[in-house]
Image (cartoon, rainbow, N blue to C red):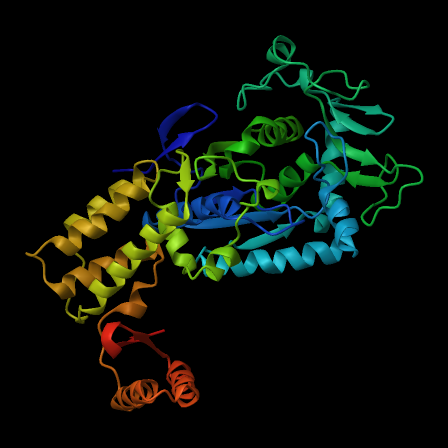
Length: 460
């Protein structure tokens, strides 16, 4: 079946047809790098990875860009409050640039541990200041902006489709609860494109512009970077569902007004990760990171597996018990695969692969795709060599590192070292046992101790 995706703009599942039949232009809103990235954030980034891999399975070449917000994201979506990077710099007693560099490095670490596909380029907002200024100048020239005492604002009343993506319009704001807004705004939905420097306030990140010294609004960065790297019209724009209401709606409005072209063909939004059926928050002490799960003895790939147990448009509830279940399932799969032997003559089972790809193409139904793994391994009419060939094809999307767990012959030297280590452990000579364990690991193998003094040897 052809790939079908739910489009947040049209509110329906549609056949996916890119502008260029051979290449997909895909942009994802990345993290604001003022603090550690949570496993809730990483669920959204995993969505980008799953979709990228699914597109590749369908024969597409994908040009994939993800931004890193290192300036301009204010605490309030109403364009008020401190820049999150500036606030973090004050909190950490360092510069905004150093804050961003530190948390970007941490983000990359977690990203790689989860086996997420790196985009063609990570774009930092501070490296595209001129492009953001150019965007604001274009909008000003076309009559979509106005000045206030604190910045240059976009007039949402001049964009007829404002609210089509979010449902957030001037009319339903007036009908709803009271919203605090800048009294100089013409409309509550208007947003800052460029913020002016505040007299007497020292900021780490400010630039000169045609309107005076200041910094870009948060929404301007994605439009400027996406269109610089991918062109005026994107095939796919990804992000968390929390961005749809304000950020993506504003990004859509300013982009289409600047270019006069359709900005995004397919908007794809991932749902929230709940923690113990509630919200995640630093104040609640449950804004867990990849390091947090590692510190509790979990493999990050278990979290990757957990992400696949719910459809991306459904909320997923994280508990330590659910993560343990995911780890148990992954370990069981590794144990099964370790008993299989590869054969150069083995082929991929096309029936199971077709089912797997149909699940991917059914609005990226990862739970259904994973179910094909377990149906395949339970099928007693298919040879083990065909099973492993098919599973390795699945793993091009699943990313579980199955290749490292396929059945193999352990060298005699490693077997000897493992036996010696086991004897040292039984005799209580733990320093010698640890020395041999490290020697075994340097050779690319690990020892897993099991009950009653036994052990298994696996490739790392």
